[in-house]
Length: 94
Image 1 (cartoon, rainbow, N blue to C red):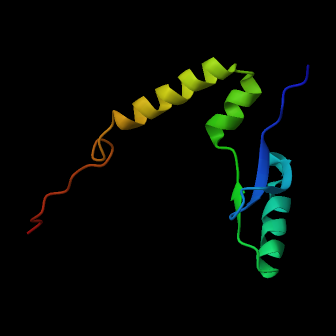
Image 2: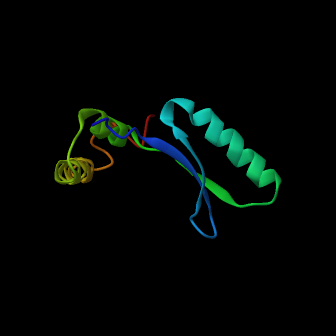
């Protein structure tokens, strides 16, 4: 059984209907299609898989493994305060 590849999708904003779909490797086609649809007056959005989505797909994670992975990513991000990675500068530098 072949793994399902991550897809880039162009969706109609009003209906969420998929208007165009392609592999991540061909994502420029989706953006070109979206631009053409916008020129015709349609409101569209491009949905691209995240890095973690493509990683999990390539690793063949099950749905439960994927859910656990996403939860662990969210927990890790939330555990860091905004200032943990940025050094605070003194207010008076005189």
